[in-house]
Image (cartoon, rainbow, N blue to C red; front, side, top):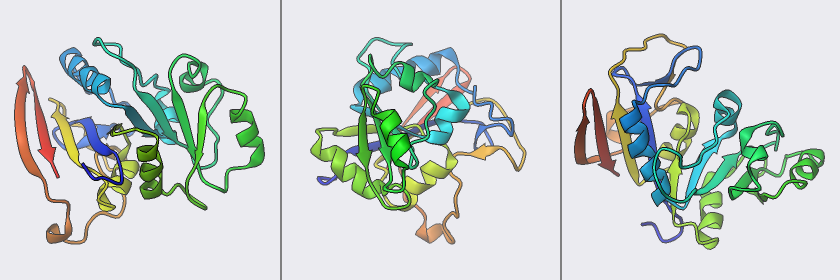
Length: 217
């Protein structure tokens, strides 16, 4: 645990070739067994964090459904505050604690629209969200553990800034291919292997036709 911020766990299901979604944004990789495991993990953390693109593409609930347990706080990174009022996140924010994180560039009209809903707004960063500062703010609000369910770009944001503590990846029995498919981590990438994030394998679990790899940073 880093004292100044919550513990961050990056979790994802990937194809054998490292994709988390096809070129058409189909991300239905996990088996029912893996969904149960994953939702048990959701129930153990204080919060789930995703970016606005995940909300736009998948329209997720980000709740615990395939296992028993509490719903964690939902944190959406949305620098301009443009999340749709028709999204499941907004429609259910009266029942599930929800935080929308914006930057200072978010238009006042968007903030006013968000303010009509029973959710919390956090401002972090100037033109884009400052993730390091955000984690410090969340720590002060007694959020001690976060499950990052990001896309490739958001995953890179957290990894290259050294903000990940655990990495749990389910290797699923699919080969996706395609240069337009989404990989687990995108962004600029590290220039050398020596500079990349160092991982220590903690555990391997076989789930029928899948393998779950659990690493610590």
